[in-house]
Length: 92
Image (cartoon, rainbow, N blue to C red; front, side, top):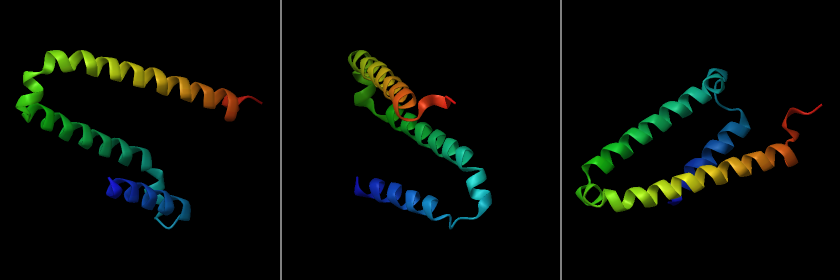
């Protein structure tokens, strides 16, 4: 877990310092998307390879759906709040 936090902090510090080549900043969104796709793909392989998850998929499916739904709703509400109250969503 600490490795994840350290990687996040190191990335934030590198981004803040502007020490990376300019081309890197131009493609940051694409690099992030590729990394996310690799992560999701590897998680899918891991889930598909786990017999316990597949055996209990019917009961896990409802819980996972509820968690995903409320996570999405919560994320949208937080972004909506931040956009309206803090960032002022492009108002002039």
